[in-house]
Length: 96
Image (cartoon, rainbow, N blue to C red; front, side, top):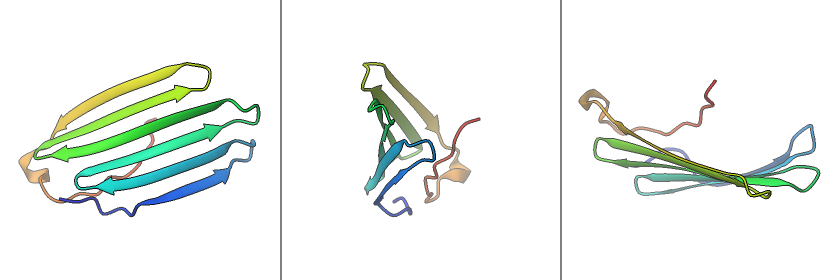
């Protein structure tokens, strides 16, 4: 099964002057998104999100590190129900 979203790069500047660069790539059943955000002061945060599907298991790994040394790392695994074992597309959504 393969992801259906295209690979590519996105760059831009927010209204508050932050620069955002993001790259998405797909290889087999793995989707990776790397993002760097740089503020007007020069401080930056770089993060990655990797989604992998292996059979009925979906694994999501997230990692981020700031230029000041702060960091974050998390991994979650989900077991898909048989009814959901069809080709799927990974979408980016923000948690509220």
